[in-house]
Length: 225
Image: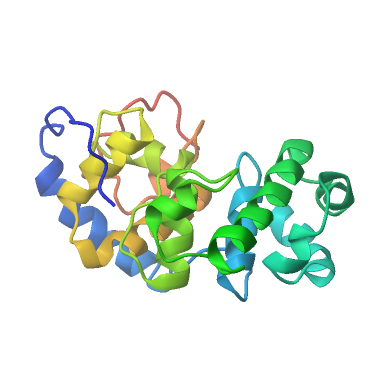
């Protein structure tokens, strides 16, 4: 679903840079996909909720035991937050996330028969979920075309001169204007990988980046040497 809030004009040169960015990302990360480990839409939903303000590595380390104990929404709906906490204690904000997961599972059972709905509004309405979570789950589980804007995607969008926005919904809207719909899911994953491997928040590896020649490096003060 497209954000409805209006966005100011795109940065100068954004439309010319976008194809260059996409070409570089396709060369660097042809198989870009989520690094969260999951087998079902339910597992992806839980993992995505847990990944807020946490690393995918920490989530992937915790979820095998969690999913072994609670393999589906019906099983998790019978758990309390206190039951869930020991499984996710290593993840940031685990107490609040445990409460959200318990409530989320109950709503999945009550409203959707225990299945993750293939519906944006229904996913957003779940406790602990939001626009980014819905985009991640629907795009990866059901092939829904979406650009989930996390900290990496937002940072790179601004640094590459594709958006001036800080609000994730408005960044999403700008990126949707610039890239083909069939590339949205790939773009999300590839930008995340580039943010993790090259375009770091504090000292990006501009000398080692294939986009250095055309990247405007918005906001970059120090680079890796």
